[in-house]
Length: 91
Image (cartoon, rainbow, N blue to C red; front, side, top):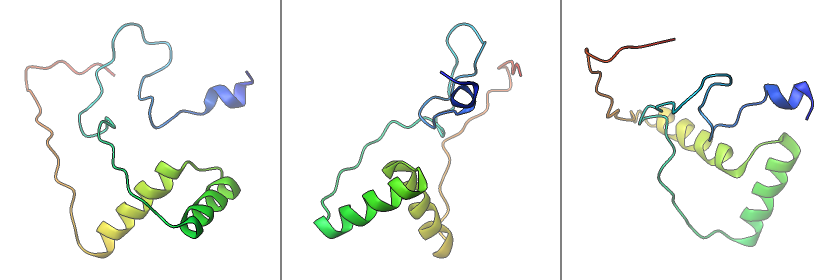
């Protein structure tokens, strides 16, 4: 594996390199839900071609499209984040 490949981080993997033990991931960042829907062959072909030519995953394209849709329509994503003041934050 080259150093260039080592620098790339996956959106699925939120862990930090070199840090030992279990690393807690914020609930708002963790990808836990799946959604499946049907599309036409033309839509799938277009999506596959776009992803291949831009080096993106289908999930990245769909997430970006949803964020753009929300932004254009004034929709805010509600966070379930609760900050425990007794929790120690180590950076």
